[in-house]
Length: 172
Image 1 (cartoon, helix red, strand yellow):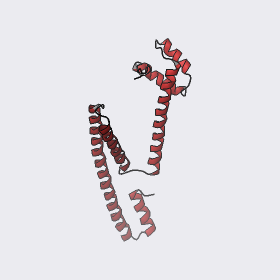
Image 2 (cartoon, rainbow, N blue to C red):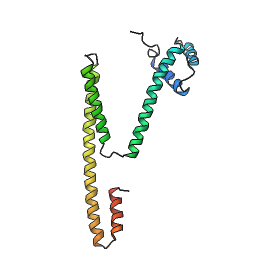
Image 3 (tube, rainbow, N blue to C red):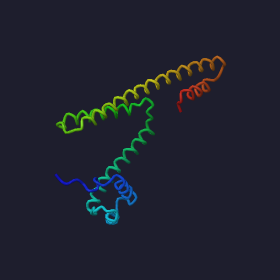
C-alpha cells in the first residue's frame, strides 16, 4: 500500500491555505507552492502537490457542475412538493445499502448509522413539508372557488375572474 499523502497529513490551517492557493492559482504554479510550503517548514514536492491538485480540481469541478445542474433543474422545474429531494434521499439510501452489502465489514458502521438516521429525519421533514404544501394548495383552491362565485354574482367578466383566480393560485 502506498504511503499516505503528505498533503493530507498537513495541519488543517496549512491545508486550508493550500486549497485556497490552488483555487486562486487556477491549479497551477506548483513549484511556487512547493517553495512556499518549504518556507513554512513542510517538504512537499511539486509532483505530490500536482497529484493532490488534480484530484482536488476534479472534485471541485464535479461539485460546481452538480450545483449548476441543480440550479438549472430548479429553475426549469420548480419542486414545491420536494419530489426531487425525496428521490435524492432514496438514491442515497440505495447507495448506502449497496455499500453495506459489498464492503465486507470494512465500513465505519457508526458513520453509516448516523447517515441513515439523518436521511430518516430528512424524509420525515420532507413528508411534513409536502403535506403542508398540499394543505396550502387546497386552501388556495377553496379561496379561488369562493372568490369566483362572489365575482360572478357581482357580474364580473369571465376574463377578469380567470385573471384573479390565476393570481390567487399563483399561476402565470
